[in-house]
Image (cartoon, rainbow, N blue to C red):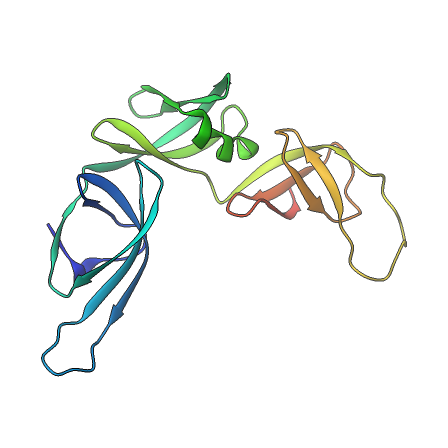
Length: 187
């Protein structure tokens, strides 16, 4: 059992028999005398993917989820589904098409990820903060075209399209932020 005073971002608790990842937590002290501190949480149900909010009273206890994080690896795409392997047990897991579609623009075969397991079942995949991908298509380099900062669209090897600086060419490796899909730098 965990008390609300131990809540922090990234903690996985059990609400309504489902693992829930705390996204945000705010402690509010009431103005009335004798009232309890309120703990407002924003969390994601790792089974359904829903983002919900719930308010607890200070001192409330909740169950810690039977949740484990394991090093994993993306093996390959099978149709629209993704196949991942736990690097500790070598067990393979399949991710459904809807969830995999959100991750696939950042995944190459062999990419290391973090698998979230709940009761021996994969419910969550955390990508690394940045990935290195190769530009396959982009407009030619325009030298001295303008004095202001400009970008151009590039197609990456995974099918992801994003805006990059005009000096980049096809065949170059770049770093991409997996949280928002934007260009960071050359690799």
